[in-house]
Image (cartoon, rainbow, N blue to C red; front, side, top):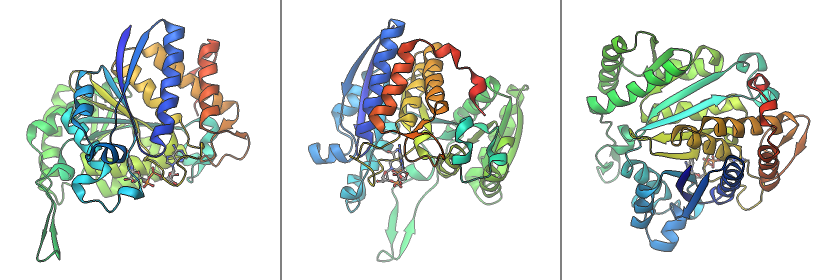
Length: 368
Ligand SMILES: NC(=O)c1ccc[n+]([C@@H]2O[C@H](COP(=O)([O-])OP(=O)(O)OC[C@H]3O[C@@H](n4cnc5c(N)ncnc54)[C@H](O)[C@@H]3O)[C@@H](O)[C@H]2O)c1
């Protein structure tokens, strides 16, 4: 298979972990006879420094022509005082909107030997395996531009959704549940927000089309509590942009580190942008200690969702699991035993495992 991939390293550790993704893809291409070509473009703070904008036209153009996009992370203290249109995060929001990537999928599944790395009790997190489907191009982050009134002493942010926007993400949630354990939890704040009332109406209307999926509704405050008190009760969660943003970061504690969580942002036709859930981690940038696993697992999601290469995706996931089971981990994981390695060494261990072609020996039972 021949595919063209645009790489957007971004800022901070984004520039480090994107190299891990590339190394892994070279190994997959070699082992499975594929041809992946790469093109690198700037986004975020790096783009502001070079081109005076967080999202240059050339970046958008290249992404539109690509078969898939891999993104590191954006942001950092250097740009924190910039006006809002010159903030690195604008690049991220802009590329999601420009590519119409309305569905953000965040799988959260812990690794057996990292259970104790979670700040939660092992018996609470054991067996957690959930998928958060977050709406990505609507809601508060994309309402009419935020406004300061009354000499800056009052503010207005708007939360807007159309029925069509809700329908397409709710469909994604139902479809994901069909491919998993058939349980969908729709999270909203329908006791207060009008947007949530429409959201709940749409879910209720849609459920007749998916009779094999069991649906329940949960208010976001209750969902936040249940995610950490009984995470195993969830299969697929579907929710709007802001709630999904907060809940998926909260769910990251189940895996012990933000550095373990991949994500996929998809368009209707399969084009996808794949990125780790974590940010640019300025506190550790340039030290060579960033955990590359979230980026590498995002690469596996790209192979699965955009290229239909499920076997190759599985080999990467098995390689990660196998290396962690062998006791190697980066310093962000509070693991009692084992050996701490840096970004480059962790990547090399995973690449070597893929190349060893012994991946099939490590099966899903290694999880939990
Ligand atoms: N998708 C994105 O690009 C994205 C997401 C979140 C935050 N940000 C931006 O990143 C910057 C820093 O934000 P933050 O500190 O709130 O969040 P962050 O995710 O960058 O870091 C939070 C903490 O987790 C650690 N961490 C994160 N990823 C890690 C990894 N792969 N390996 C080891 N440790 C890791 C960091 O060292 C830090 O202590 C901000 O400018 C923020 O706007 C970008």
